[in-house]
Image (tube, rainbow, N blue to C red; front, side, top):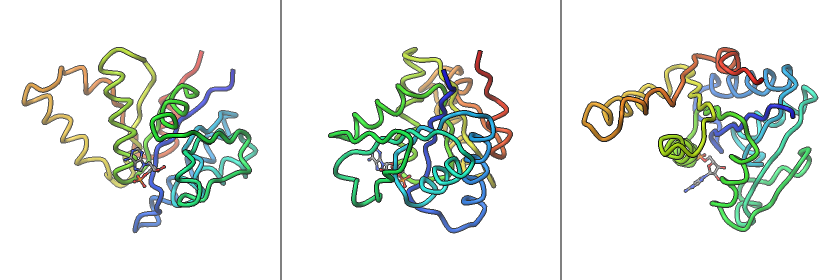
Length: 180
Ligand code: AMP
């Protein structure tokens, strides 16, 4: 089976070109390795950039979008696989079930929601898929500090920190992944 990388990222570009560059580097890297992109099927912001770059590199794309976001996120219909779900919960489940690892690019509340969902599933022992924060320009420094704070205050085991890997750029993030 082709290794599949679930990418969570902003439906906006953010205010620095660094974020766009990182998302395109990630798309190039996924395609260059012959891996498949799994993502939220939007054609906007960093989401669209990752998908277009994977496509340009000849890679496979698997997108999942709920009906109500089809207009808002401009559902990208020219993906290798395009799945429309009834609800947001179904979308997140289908994305995760079809992925072998998760990489988190810069993003907003939606990206954080997705990250915390798979992190809590990992904490509960429901999966062992790698979760990597692509910490370009230190965008996730506050989040990482917050996770340390949660452990320091006794609200999670130390192991919470082991479930999250960080990488300074796209290639470093992809290099953390090996698939047997
Ligand atoms: P954002 O990081 O807020 O730009 O959102 C990135 C992705 O998360 C987009 O595909 C959104 O549809 C999705 N998203 C936004 N809000 C939520 C939410 N409350 N729950 C789950 N996913 C969301």
